Amino acid sequence: MGSLVGGWAAGLDVKDTNDVRFDWMLDLNLRSAFYTLRSAIPHLENAGGGRVLLVGSRAVVDAPPGQAAFNIAKAGVVALGRTAAMELEEADITVNVILPSVIDTPATRKSLPYAEYLKWPTPDEIAAVAEFILSGESGVMSGAVIPVYGRS
Image (cartoon, rainbow, N blue to C red; front, side):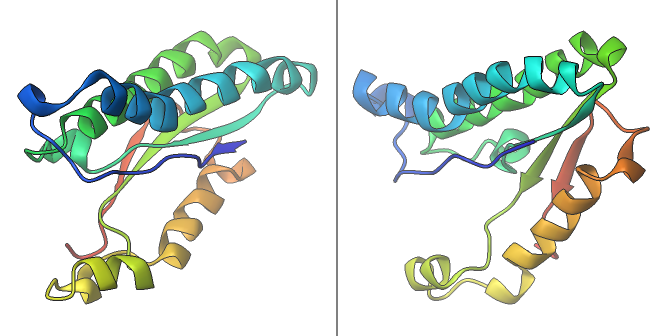
């Protein structure tokens, strides 16, 4: 099961982040992952186990200024993944989190026209990491937080 819902909105500092923006980032990034995972657990248990992949962000590590709500929400996704990994170990359910950096997409290139986009991971590169994590071959991994930064 992969929880791929999430998003980023133009950031604000902590002092300028209003409740609406803060709640929006929590809803979009943390609550969506929490509710998806919570709903999937009974099905994974009934199936005798499974794999869960959550999507965090490099922002959890770097904590760039000006995007407090996003950074906080993605840090929550990491905490959710690590907690669930421990809670679900006996059910043979693994839970891991990937931390992509800026992703090389046409929209990102347009919004950051002077950036070194050749260093960013592509969606296909991120998908390859996700495919491994969701495969049977990754059964020895759970609670891992995996950077997917490309060459950036």
